[in-house]
Length: 167
Image (cartoon, rainbow, N blue to C red; front, top):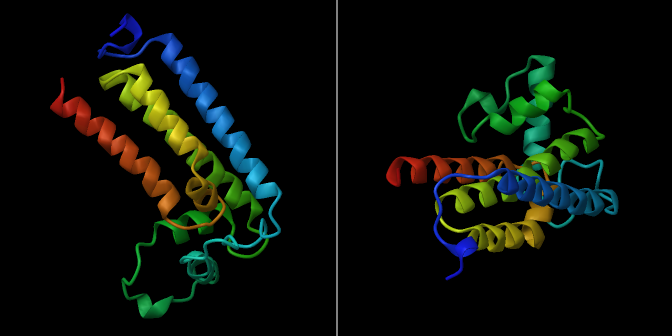
C-alpha cells in the first residue's frame, strides 16, 4: 500500500481542490443534462415524475394561502416549502431545477471529502466518480423531488456519524 492509499486523519488543501473539481464536473454534467432536455421547465423529468407535480401544487397552495390535502401530513413538506420560498410555484421551474442540480453536484463532492478524510483518497475518488456519473443522479437532479436534498443530507449524516464513531 503506497502512502497516498493509506487510511488518513483529516483533509488537506489537495483534498479540497479535488472535491471542488468533482463538484464543478458534476454540476457541468447535470446542467448539460438539464438544458438538453425538453422538460426543463416542468417540475419533473420525463424519466421520473415522482411527487414533483404534488410539490408544485402544494407550493402554489402555500402562495395563495389555501389548505393543501386538508392539511393532513401525507408527505414531508420540505420540497413544497423550498419551492414556495424560491417563488417556484408555477412554470417555468428551471430556476428551481438549477438549485437541484447544485445540490446534486454537491453530493459527490461531499462524499469524496467524507471518505477521503476517514478512509483513503482512492475510496473517495471511486465513490465520488460513481456518484458523479450515475444516470440516476442526473435524473433526480432534474426532477423536483425530495431524493436530491435527502441524498446530500444522508452523506452529511454519514460523515458526522463517522466522525463520532471514529474519532
